[in-house]
Image 1 (spheres, one colour):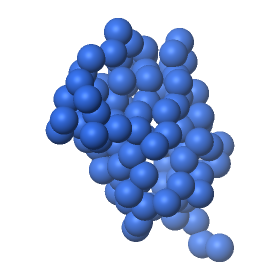
Image 2 (cartoon, one colour):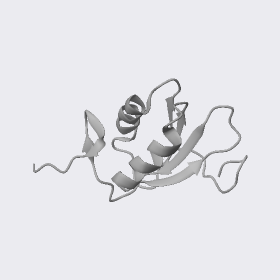
Image 3 (cartoon, helix red, strand yellow):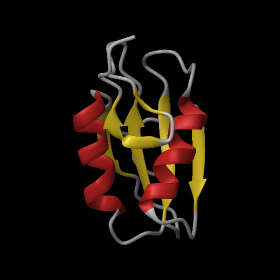
Image 4 (tube, helix red, strand yellow):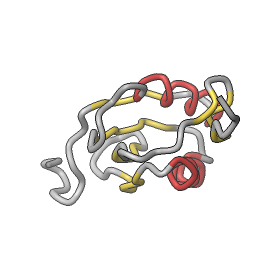
Amino acid sequence: MNPTNPETPASDITVDGTGLLCVTLLLRLRKEIDGAKPGTVVHVIATDPAAPLDLPAWCHMTGHHYLGPVPGDERPVYALRIAADARPTRASAPWHTDDRES
């Protein structure tokens, strides 16, 4: 658990997206969590003002669990949990699910 907020789990992976626009942040996030086990908690440092809208939307689209903002850090940090049944996204466009036929 996170000592500053016992309801927010501590991170297993931290993705630093400081200074990145959400498009680039999602590319980095997708790469960093590739192969992560279900249940893994990810903290995303995101300074883009769109992040509070884009990260929950991305989690909804993919099936990952958005846990919300993480209090107590001087930078904006958001938490999510990796889902076992998450929908894959396109490598070059993580804001689109990869629903193409194999």
